[in-house]
Image (cartoon, rainbow, N blue to C red; front, top):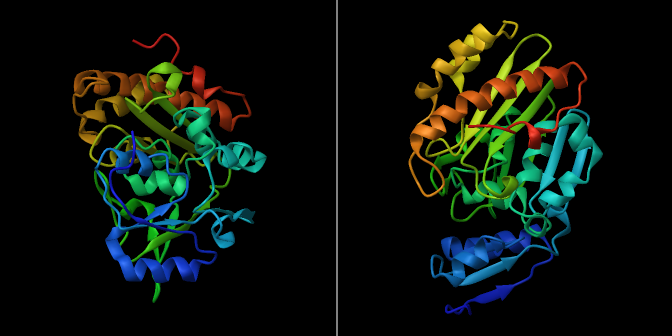
Length: 298
């Protein structure tokens, strides 16, 4: 399929150059990093840019670093680059799990975390981990900078808090001390598909829980009622059964070509239970393969 829409292509070298172009073209300028969604949307006529701004040569957006308690991911960093970093697996295991489930290996070498959150589709695999870690999205325009908590980022399907003249320069993800997390995804093709349901679960040694989900409502979100029930308590089958009863109040799934809303609700209970026990196992030093956690699910 050829591109039916003509546009200008620019490849700036600095963030300031990018921001100047964004100020000039506003909503008609689109950022090109991995391009895995963007190019498809242009080919299908869903987007009609006047300008594509290729940021792959902007050194400031290629930063990936762990400084003390904070992981910083620049706008050009791909999922594959995160997967290959041992510190991501060690200190951000839920994010590491999620990165490995995004599409196929070929896509992950190009697709970026920032592009992922900017797409704001309900099934974002990265979102539960970012929500549990309470990440901060760094935005900039030519005249100002803004930091937006990830909980305020997703406004509606395919809509974020980003303004037309802004770009996302990166995202900061705090460590959560003495904790362990896991991302549990139900998807077709061994997970290399959009999630039918996704749950991110984190447990700390002081029995504080952070739980978030994707593909189960208009936007990814934290499960505040379930967290409140679990906080301060040791896990048990009876406690988890009470948590599962709250799932219908936490999610608002739909029926689509991937799954029915009834099945998404049912399977979420299984995912939550297995995920909670798996997070506890990781906290106690046991190795848990998130990809195998849903074997035999029905």
